[in-house]
Image (cartoon, rainbow, N blue to C red):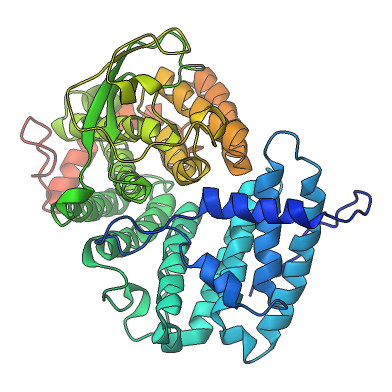
Length: 504
């Protein structure tokens, strides 16, 4: 288990009126949970939390962890900053209770103990600062340790199975960011694949299982692409590229496995963007999805492919001199695929953060920011609409929560236009400011620093979440291109850099 050592609040002691804590819980259940609206997805998000909360022992850590998270989220609303002290106090209580529960042989195997740890991870997302950004991963590590401790016993209840899938999804993201392979799961017969039954139907589980290959790819790329070039290194880079292409093809094929009602439609078109730092929408189509969960699944698919395509791009950049890249079909195809994936993430943003009213009225007009025009296509409108009467600036907190990681992944694609990168950064900041997801603000600040470095060095190579390329080696580019062709031919690889593709 991770060592939970949160900071000690220094604000003056106070007592929270019961009504405000109840308001915070109601706000949390309204904004951060969703019941399934779709048979084939089999779940919403934290939809089981409310019944578990009512059934749990009041002395269990679940009560303190949920109160801490709810108060933290509620305190990010205008005029409620003073509630953060109470959230910190409940956080400390939850940590103490979790440590006590983990030490108890019976409580360590209770569903509520794992849920409590995961809720503290959500607390870290809501309250994130640059100093405690890695703490979320420590909570995920704690949840993984508890899953291993439970073993197959975890699947005896529907709740336990859902907890497993929740932990697994966060574990994969955690390992992707760390560039560490997914470790084998002992104690569960199917390992991290888990039993595939009615609790999690095929398409959703398949995507998560496919994504578990990405941390290993990234771990290999991080080490291999930093090595000095040699013939052995060149051959390994080609093999890594082939492996990334294989994983990418498998993930791309996932779209043929999904139910028809998971598929999205184009509900409108945004034209024009004078200032990417203030524009609400990015030029291009706007997507409509069945619900937020389906939209989140699609963006997870896009993020997974971005990671694969960026590894392919880095491999090509190491193998092909810079002056030959734009005439190489494989390189151009990779750039185009990355751009299409990022564009699709941008097209999903209005669905997550709120369409303009004109979408629902099906009439074109000037948007509030004054520099964009909306053209409505005669297509079916989405079923999800954030309620402007209850959400500040028509922005859904859960939509922003789902979108934060995916926007940051898209932002870190090195080949996209700078205007698009600025716009993606501005949407992260919007999520932080309006939705109260502090992690989005921290990631936006990190993005601004990399933008500054990128402008001064052409590209912030090797500093991006998705980019493992070392600084450009001009000496190698002047002498190495023909050498690699000869060396690769000796190893049996084709040196076809023509229109038929690289290494066909």
